[in-house]
Image 1 (cartoon, rainbow, N blue to C red):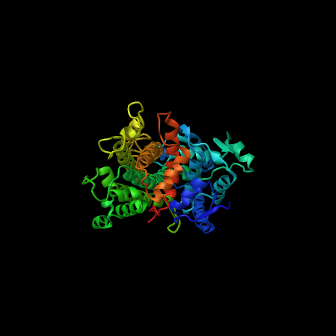
Image 2: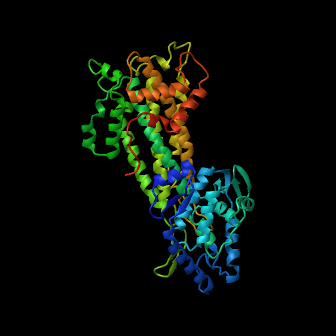
Image 3: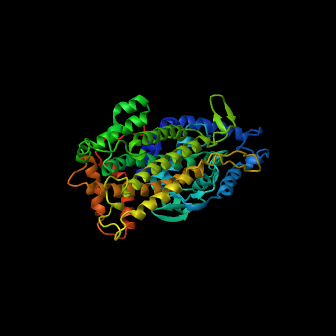
Length: 512
């Protein structure tokens, strides 16, 4: 597979999703090279000067007032990387690390960091030849950049740290040698350029975004199936209702659900003579809730797209002005807010889905479905405890959705006295996604069971396709059995995106 050519400043979330999901190597558009080399030239000149320039010939953080002799600038950068390799926790996955490396390339490629092109080429070669730094998952507070995780990434470039090649973990130098590469000593400011940045936080924000959007699309399908299972009304999907409010996501969610339910015999069977006046909110207000989720995710996507293309280290080289200026682009507050928004969306997708599960297993609300969706209630418990599991995970996600950006704490002897906490704010999205996949998987199981209880009436063709795919993995529940594998298989169908793709309905896209 040929490398994907990326233009710094113009990369989209779809581009980055391709990198993350396929493992495709990337290269920067060569047109950005002159700007990169011009900035490197400015840094080289500053390194020869007696004037103090932060990160070039000074210490770091609280030690910024300490002047470093020109003969020690290489040692300064090496020491910076080694001393900042303080990450802890489980290593992140190969795909996650490669996305971080790609984001770092994009930031350096803006031509404001002052690194030599040889280092950009090194990152590209590592991606192409499968050298993946081992990066711990914990240790960043999301300002002065994601220092610890990015230091672990950078350590491999200088022949330190640990890396993985062909599934085998080894010392960084050995990993480079195995694929025909050699360590590169860092020049003035280059270590700082690599670790000052938001790429860890942004990568996990993007991964959370990718998963959240897919889960939202799957939830549109499972919610339509639940609507048919309890013989709910499609009147609340009337387009005029949603046009009168005007929110884009709500309009799109209602349209998708109308298409998903079109042609359902179950729906047509109770258009007349239904004694119920209105369905509960978890059925009636699905477009309003899911539409709001989609709108919030699009807002987060806009922030993350901008951040993925941003120069986020410090100081930055303003080549046209011939200046090296200290600032604060490493502060990941925008990413932290985006991660909190995604967390709220994940929590709400699960909250309303869990209420639909509760609705389907409750005989007083499910419109004549048997208790807990089992033919012999009492002797069999059916999906009783599967619903309890969804309640547990829904509650856990509510707690995880609490904002992280409000939890600042001072670090580095009070020099870095306000931080974003974006790193763990974004990283927690993975756990929330795992929980949500189970909630939606259980809804899929219950909705399929409920629809089958409506036989000989059939659901719509798109929903029947999803039901058929589920039944290829999980048979209908007739008598009680060991349910954990069923739940795992249904959750995997959600996580894989198959449920949404099998619906054969044109679903909304996260892109504007």
